[in-house]
Length: 341
Image 1 (tube, rainbow, N blue to C red):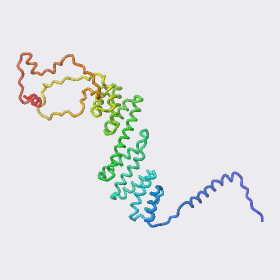
Image 2: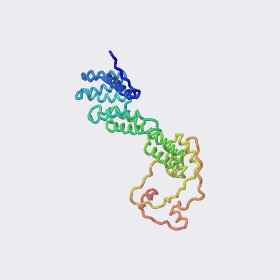
Image 3: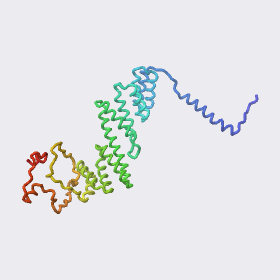
C-alpha cells in the first residue's frame, strides 16, 4: 500500500498557520461556553446570593442577569436588577453598575428601593474620585447624584451619609481650585490666580480651604498693588478666622501698610425726612484697621495734625462769631430725633 505525501513549501505553511490557530480557538471557546439551561428562578437567585457571600461578584452579576433574562415577569426579576448593579459595584465595575442603576430607575421610578438606587449611583461616582491634580469629572458627577438623593429623599436612611459625602466632595473641588490657583500664582499669573481663589471664597464657603484662599487673595492683591482690596480680604479673614495660622501670616503682610485715607463726615448735615434709614451691615468695616492676632499688639495709628474744620457743627460756628443760631423746623428727620430736638 503506497502512502500519499504532499510536500508544502514554507510559504504555504506560513499561510496555513493562522487558520489553524483560529480553528483551535473556536473549538476551545465552544467548549467553554455553558449551554443555556432554563432553571427555576429561586435556584438561580439563591446561587447568585451564595456567589456574593463568597466574594465572586462578577459571577453573581451574571447570575442576577440570568434571573432577569429567564424570568422577566417574576417578582424576583426586579430585585435581580438592583442586585446585579450592587454586584457590579462590589466588583469595581462602576460603568456597568451605573448603567444597571439608570435602567432600574427609569423602569421602576415608584419602587420602594429607588432611593437606594440613587444612593448607590452616587457611590459609584464617589469611589472614582482621584487626586486633586487629576480630572474631577467623577467628583462633579458624585456631587450631583448625592444632591439628588437629598432633594428627592430627604428623610431616607441614606440622606445622612449623602450629606457627609457632599461635604467631602465640595471640599475636594475646593482643593482642586486651590491647586490650580497656587500654580497660577507661582508663575505670576495673578489675575487667573485671583479668579480661582475668589471662586473658593464665593462657592465653597463651608470648606476648610477658605482661610488659605483669603490669605492667597491678600498676597495677590498686594502683588497687583490693590491695597484696599488686600485690607478687605485681611479684615474678613480676621473676623471669621481669628485663630487661624493663615491669619497670623496675613497680619504680618498688612500690619505695615499705610493707613487708608478716611474722608471726614459732617454729622450736622440734614438727613432726608422721608424714606427708610439704612442700617449698617454686620461684619468688619472696610476702612477699619486689621485686628492683631491674639498675643500681639497692633501698631499705633497715626494721629492727625489738626482737627478738620468741617467736623465742627454749624450751630457752634455761629456761636463763635457771635451770631444767633439758625432756627430750623422741628421736623429734622432722623438727626432731629437723634439729637433730641
